[in-house]
Amino acid sequence: MDYFGLTRCQAMVMFGQQYLLVVSDIKREPDYAKKALKEKWLSQWKDGIDTFINKINKEAFTDDISYLAKITESPMKFTDKCFSGEYGYLNRVKVFVEIVLFCPYYQLDDEPEKYKQLQISDQEQWKQELRVLAGYFKFSPNTPERIKENFKKALAHINGKQFNPFFALVGALFFVLLAPFAIPAIVALLAPIIVPGVYGAAAYAAVMAALGGGAVAVGGAGMAGGFAVVVAGGAILGAAAGAGVSSLLKESPEFVASQGAKLIVVVKELFLDDRVVAKKVACDSIKQLRQSIRSVEDEADDLRSKDMTDDLKRQVENLNKTKKYLDGTINQIEELLE
Image 1: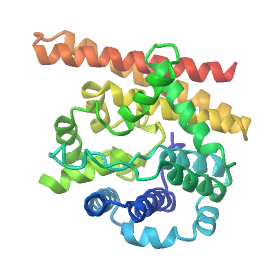
Image 2: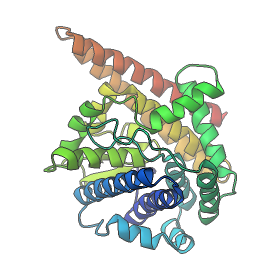
Image 3: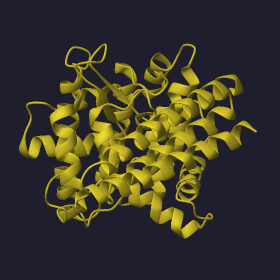
Image 4: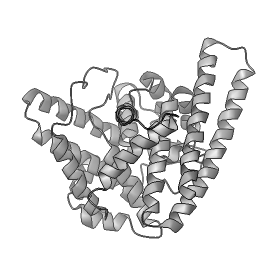
């Protein structure tokens, strides 16, 4: 299913707007030392995104992030160009969801403490910039806050808990900042797949920059067209999951929860404007999620047939959590169809 894939133009908008948000935040940072550290983070993030994009599709993505930033200084013109056609509204929603949920200054290398002290310098100004961006994407100014609230609620419900504002807030930051990932294991799994031939710090930054920006590479040599880049929950849909994503499910059920929450947010937004497309995306997503559940169950059964080690037990436990989160995602999407 191609609903959650990115075109070259859409990827330029998404990463470019994330880049510009951080540039603006750095300009507002009053502390000189923190400003310098933020600039270092942004440079490292930019390099990671460049590596990620060029390795996925070197022919299609020829522009670096600096050029993206220049283009997105005129976002109204650019968004009109990138988000037209039959699924124009869906495409705008999925990219804008990733921009709204983007949270900078997370870990990009094997030094977890390096950027830990950094925070957005002025949350109100950041929110105001998102409100302005909402207009460029043809959404109302309250759309960013609605997206954030729906994301928090979806996370809480996927986890099988009654909605608790404090839990949801912690959960949102928890997942967006990638804190629950066993980060070295995730990098080891994904780097050979999405940035083949890249090693060490460059590979680490590429994987972390892409995941934090909301993009996941799926497919591979056996997939027509090679790799694709999916966002807004598309990575957990059965047809999309490649070797890297399948391995990720065994290592980080939290990844599934965050992707499921994004998928729910997108479907909710679609129902506000285009119910025909919303129903089609919702029904197709449910089918693909059920396919993902079958794959997870088969994988768990295969592991149980082996002599169980502590590591295999952990993987089975993670797959059980993954199934729970996929079921929770389906339940919420089904409620939207009622």
